[in-house]
Image (cartoon, rainbow, N blue to C red; front, side):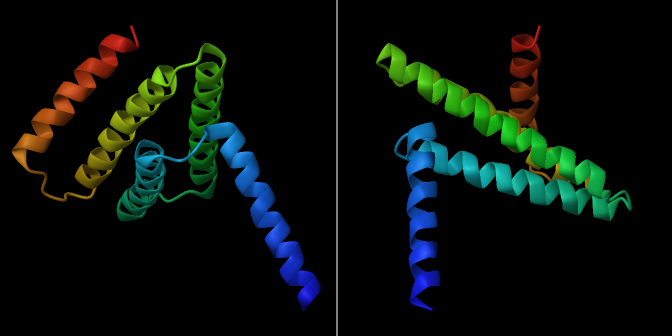
Length: 135
């Protein structure tokens, strides 16, 4: 039993060290991104189930997309380390936060969940900003 406990502790410490290296000390911004990514995935699954289109292949694609988001955030953190700032990392997280929030609200709309008008307006503004950035 002690052997498994030691293995577990070593695994947790190793994963923590890798995460710290890749993302830095997890601040509130990063924790919020983790929450939004999880909520987006769950609401996407719920919306697909609601529409009768739940598909494990699409779910796997969603997980791959989420992994790439975190790879890009890790790259942004690395750039900040190289340049001595914290701006690229934060801006990258803010970009993905807005995309994830937009997707969460769209998923709720797919399930006919009533969305307050002020949130619809904010989503519209975010969508316009996102479309302008992607041009």
